[in-house]
Image (cartoon, rainbow, N blue to C red; front, side, top):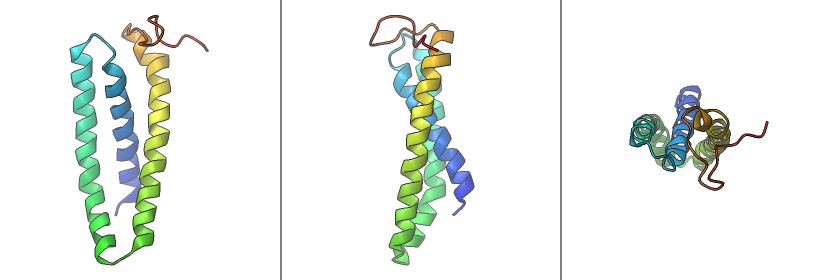
Length: 111
């Protein structure tokens, strides 16, 4: 299994998924569609990379390898999601003039 490649794809996958989630609060179908294509494309690429590693670990009864795969996945996707949320609030939403769903004002303005 190519851990560095999968790590990069996981970071992109969850970054894009978070942007899809946040774009649902916008009035722009175009932005939502673009973020959806980005998210779904990285998801399928991630599956192509990880399936071989999971099947190999399963057939070899290598439960520690499955645990490492799970921990790696959870760590990278969580970090990516938190960073993407911050990035969207700080840069993308103000750039695209997307209103914050909760405050009904321009997105995060605190520095």
